[in-house]
Image (cartoon, rainbow, N blue to C red; front, side, top):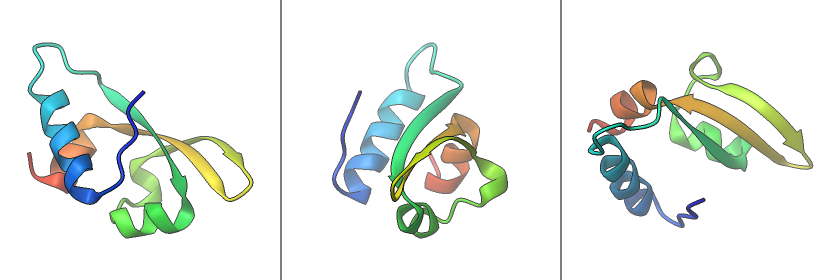
Length: 71
């Protein structure tokens, strides 16, 4: 589990994951609906796994993140 507090930390972390010899096919992200809107991910690009209070746990394919973050 990795907690990141800024867009730069997120980008650095995603680049590190993508560079691994066997990167995962997807990541689980926890955030609010506002966080998801700010990320510019479209609802069709992720799967909501669970919702609790104002938070959502979503699964996002690495390929989608690579395009969004251009790595």
